[in-house]
Image (cartoon, rainbow, N blue to C red; front, side):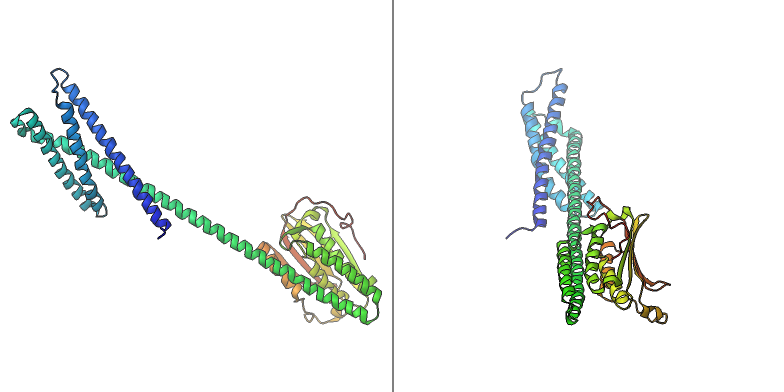
Length: 393
């Protein structure tokens, strides 16, 4: 059966703990052996050194090494108990093991030397044994605490890495959802615009204006080709967006001829500003539908762009129609079609709360739509040197 990441982490922790324990054993008892050997060497420097002493020292350290192995399971079992109880168990275990080691050392020394009177010095021998095992216990607990701290640190890093991966996944999912929403909203404009244009072509055909209908079909194909080549998610320069609006208005010019006039007031600095593609076309379409088409004398559509600090201000307004100018105040409904709602939703997706879109009626007649978005720009190749001056179609 496959092991989980948690089980693998636990196995690694156990292996690391075992390695550290054996390193502790080797280093600590080798140090005790060397210290004992050197102290005995200096102690017997002025007298004859017993020949058995090196072997006896090695034997005693070997016994201590084995006895310390008995302390490990006791320490591990008592590790989860309260601090007071744990300390008591440790001291008792160390006292017992130190006593056993003292007895073994003294008995071994008595058998080698025959000095039975050595038992009178039991306290001194026991004190040295107790000091050695307390030293070993301090090293063992210190290493164990270090391993636990290291293990907790690794767990914290794993949790942080997990949350970071989850954050990346969530951001990616949000980006995908945002992109899908923008594509849906952007592509929603094509059938909406196409429906209105085909109705206009049908009207021209019905009134036997074949030439005008043919010109409108050609310009419609150019506009659709332009709209389909633009990525619905990427932003375009305002200069490109103005070009797209002019393509659309060329189509409408087939219907209205001299009744439709267009005036552009675009600051040079705003030409490279980035805006969502197909942002202005629905506004121009509303102006044509609610102002130009309803007025026998036609009207004017004005597009204005200004930079105001860190924001880009875009305005699309029309001159209104004679019907709307004579209607009582408040009776003319603001446009609630697909176009304006689509723009608001796209701006909300792209800029959250950093945009504004207002629609109001001008005192002299006609509608004014004002859009304010963050000013973003990049250097773009100029495609049309005439879009910054007034154009009359």
